[in-house]
Image 1 (spheres, rainbow, N blue to C red):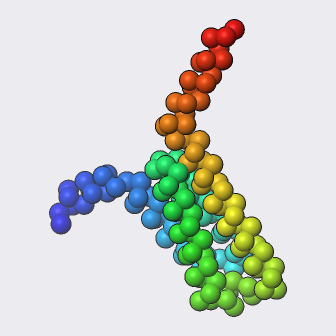
Image 2 (cartoon, one colour):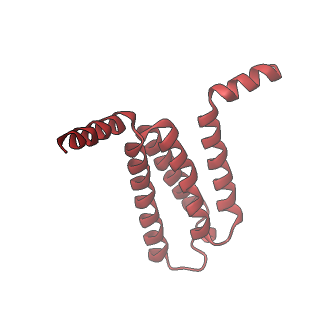
Image 3 (cartoon, rainbow, N blue to C red):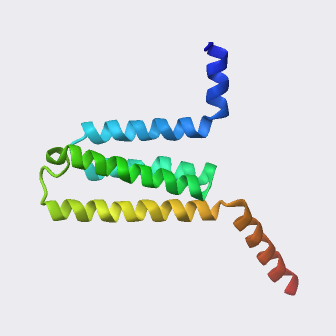
Length: 131
């Protein structure tokens, strides 16, 4: 593969490459940073970018992948993830984070869905014609 072919591939799949890089960075940060509640918020970046650029479905899949990556990390390295808190407190933190992450992906993906935006514009235009 030449450099030019590599550049064309990156441009063609830019959104997916960006999301992959952000997820990789978030996973490395999860491993290196001691306080996990700080790094969990970093996972919102790939989810919101995917929801905005690629739509609700890809945003939701990115959110689910993010949750699975964090759960895998917590299962493989429980002493690093739950080191200074009780187990139930850690589960509550993960559950609330996962729920809000998935909800944010759905909301952003729906808000920027072209069909929803067009329907909203028609509804607003219809209301404006009445006045």
